[in-house]
Image (cartoon, rainbow, N blue to C red; front, side, top):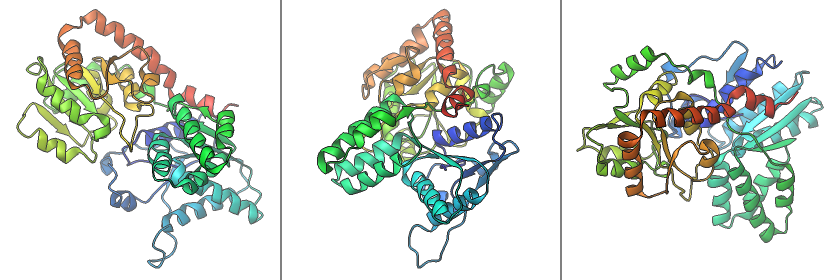
Length: 406
């Protein structure tokens, strides 16, 4: 249960990678239950080009159940479709593992479907895993606490803990879950925090390392040529274009850089801040915007850049709870990663990146100048080698085998 492709979201990639490995680990039928594409489009989510989505392997089925009911049901129609389809799958006499990413609403769908299947007498052989991702904590739980909506927070924790296994995407996320549970307990007299401390484990995002390592030099050069770029001739920002990702800081810092005459700034991605950032940069022809980068081109752009910048910063509605793009860049090689220690990014990069303080625009400009002008070839190679070793710990096979032990 997940927001799957075409949504541009690290956890869409998580679902794809876990699904692919599942086929090699004895699962005979893997399904991604997700949302109809018109619903995703209407929600305003950043989406990949529909005509360039990578195909799934045979044995993986993406299902997008239609809504149940008509216009007289103002909300919940698509949730009813998802829940009903899951009940149908659980009614089949096949041992099933059900993993939900995003507590709201996917975990609720799983809990409701399992309850309904058992009440109907289907006796499903099912094991449920709920994985709390970044926005579950920073967007949903924290907003409930800020607004004093402890009832909603209690429902969320109850639903989370109703699963057989409960998992967080990083140690930072686990700590935030426990801290939030403590706040609810203090107000409501509940005991969520103790249960979370005892039960919540960590499972980092799984990444298909084979898509990033050992890239053909000719393929990199060809991809850059198509975009009018050269190796080490640009700084790359490839992520959701949003304030919390530090994109405003990066554009301002680029204007201050001593090395801006040597390197362009490539902003690759979509997001709520894209049009505003375009307007900021309209007088600067050295800032290039790419909003159609697909999964095949992404590692090639990462490999060819002089530096990859993700100056993410904490915002009320979002904190970077891991940083999947950071680990992907570390696998691809190329210039160094420049980022901040925000949320769980330190867990992603370890000691293999150039670190700046969140919101420090001058420090960001200096760090990028250092990466472009001052690092020697041997220093870059040594940092890239350490980064690759660190990022390989997030390979999808290793993560799958930890999450689904035999």
